[in-house]
Length: 314
Ligand SMILES: [Zn+2]
Image (cartoon, rainbow, N blue to C red; front, side, top):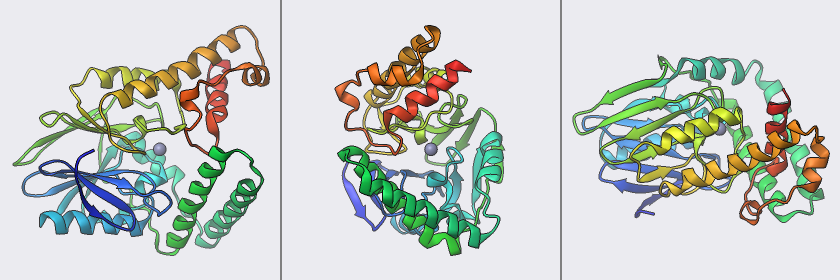
C-alpha cells in the first residue's frame, strides 16, 4: 500500500499516485465502504460517498482541503446504502450513475417516514445484538459486531439523512476529461447488484471497483453468471492497482481471488442442482476451503451458497 497522507475518524487517505487518492474505511465508524478522490486538474471527482452523511461531509472536506480544489463530480458505483448515504454532502455537484442504478436507488433507499425508519433500524440492532450474543463462531461474531457498529452509525445520522439521487445518467460507458487526466466509467452489467459501475484510470492503470471487487468478504451476489463475466472483462483491462469496495487496495490478484470464489460457489451449486441434491445436503457435505474461513460477512459463505443455489434452481 502507498503512503498514508491523512487519518480521520471515518477513513484513512492514501495517495495512489500524484492526484489520485483512496479513502479506505475504518471498520465500524460509519464510512463502511471505500471511496476515491481524483484530481482532474481544475476540479475533483469523487467515487462513492460512504454510508453516512457525517462520513460524506468529512470526505468532501478532506478532498477540498488537501487539493485546494472543488468537487465537481460524484460517482455512485451502485445503489447500496453503504456507498451512497453520504450523497447529500455532494448535493451541489454532478452526481453520476447508470440509469438502472438510479432507478434502484430511488426504489430501495426511500425514507418514507423517519419515525418508522428509526424504529425498524432499532429493531434490527436489537436482533443483531442477540445474534452476537448467541453465536459461538468467532468470525461470525466479528462480522455481526461490525454490522452492528455500522448500522448504529447510520441510526445516529438518520435524523439528518437525505436521499440525493444521481442527476446525470449513463448506460455502459462515460468518459470524463479533465485538464490533467481522463477517467472512464464502465458498466459491464450487474453482478453484485443489477447494475455495477467502476472507475478506470487508463494512464495510471488504477481501477476503483466498487463492490465488484472486495477483500476477504462474502460479498452479496445478485447474479453469479454476470458477476463472473464482468470480472472476466475487468481482467482484460490494463490495471495495476485495484481499489476494492471493502478492504485494502492491491493488485490484479484481488480480481483473481474473487473470481475463484465465485467459481467455487457456481461449480458446487450448479452440480448439486443438476443432480437434485437438496441445499441442506449440499451444505452439510461441502468442505469449505481454508482460504475462505476467515472471510467476514453476516450471512457467511452459506448465505452466498444459498443465493447461488437458488439462482440455478430457478
Ligand atoms: Zn454493495
